[in-house]
Amino acid sequence: MKKRIRKHLTSLAPELAAKTYGFLSDHNRISALILEDRSYTLSLLERFILSLIEYIFTGDRLKVEKKAREIAIHRSKQGISLACVLERIRLCRDILLDQMERDAHHFISTEEERLELYQVRLDLYQFVDSLLDLFIHIFESEEFQREQDKLQASSAAREHFSEVAEQELVQLVLQSTDIAVLIIDRNLRIIEANYSFAELQQVERQQIIGTNIDETFRPRENERFVQWVIERGQSGHYVAEINGILTTVSTSPIYHKGELWGAISVLRNITDSKRYEEELTKREALAAVGQLAAGMAHEIRNPLTSIKGFIQLLREQTETIQNTSYFSVILTEIERIDGLLNDVLVLARYRDDKISAERFLIMDEVLGVIRLLEPESNRRGIRLELNWSGDEWYIYGYRARIKQAVLNILKNAMEALTTKGSMVEVSVYASINQVVLTVEDDGPGLEEKVLKNLFVPFYTTKPDGTGLGLSTTQRIILDHGGEIFAENSLRLGGARFEARLPISNG
Image 1 (cartoon, rainbow, N blue to C red):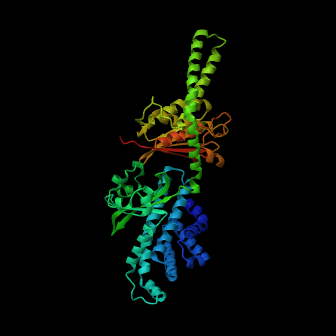
Image 2 (image 1 turned 90 degrees about the vertical axis):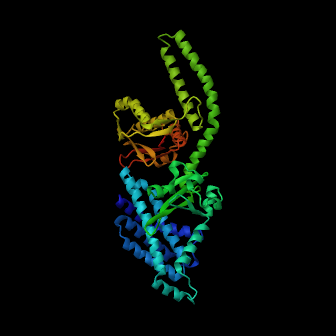
Image 3 (image 1 turned 60 degrees about the vertical axis):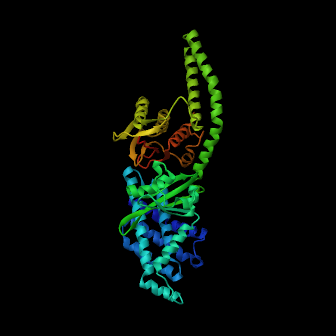
């Protein structure tokens, strides 16, 4: 897998360097000296990013450190502060990590490779953290001090550089307007948070300093990202919605003299990013459907119930050999209409008083759906396989809704095997605090246009389809606090659906 990462990211190195340079320019964080030296700066950024990519593949620290020294000395000659240099190095790393996350589907075909990619990203994150210490030592070294003496008319008033740099870095972070920063100690106590974080969380900064993070914010169990650094030693990059704002969250441990001292979390608002425009468009479409669906569905369902009742009564009173088939067709079509209305009500987030939420075993519903579809799969010559360790996981929610979502995903996979393919593989496993259901097939796969519109209500590629199956499935999964993704399977060549639901611990 590392070879694929190396090849893919190496081809993107010039683009990533330009993106880094553009970010610094757009945010007025690059000095006039660097702007005048654009070509050299781009070359320097690209070489440094390439050295990080090489480190991923070979683990060669010396090559990266050499590039780091080159950047440090070059910046010192230009009179750039340590804080600004550290910011540029972190930005190179973050852009590289973001690209790896965005293109993860290029590298991952198995769960083992997913875990391996997590480890690669974690190693890179921690390595750059150690690299920053090298920068500080370079800036404090005698060689650097001599360079500074040449640039400054007098060095008599020079203070201890590390203290100045630390103060400058703290001020840079605290005054940042587009990056939210939170620092906690190993007792989960908030010891620092900048104003951007306070604004994101809609709290007063002074009131949260010194408080316990769980008591102050009461996060959902599956979103305790910075706490996991202390509790599990787990750093990472996540996406979360905070007060309606779509945000990336990056976490990392803080060590002092070899001991875990605390954890830092860096959050960025990505609501306006192009990366999420399509998802937001889909949400708007769902909201529009919801405004119309509930009232219309009820208005249609009331006369439909009466029609169904009278048809059944007529069937009992006047059934003959000639009209038996007619009654069956009418009742079947009524059931089909009722099913469509049920899908519309799910999209409208209607809550039926007749059903209630409960804690149940997810595998009961998965196995039930597989048993239901086995006769059809056998008739069509489709191999329906289940990969499952036998473990049991509870989830909390609406049993019938989850069964409907699983059924929709599996039926969609089987229906895709009309022109090509004969296998549908279902895998269920646990990942941290979520149960993960994947459905893959060896069919024709999903075109780019289909992938973009897959969960949009009423979008369908089937002649007799309604376009509500997958949008209904997405609504059910989201309403249960989960996530659902679709892509093409690197392993089987067809489509791959992945649904994640939070595990209920009682």
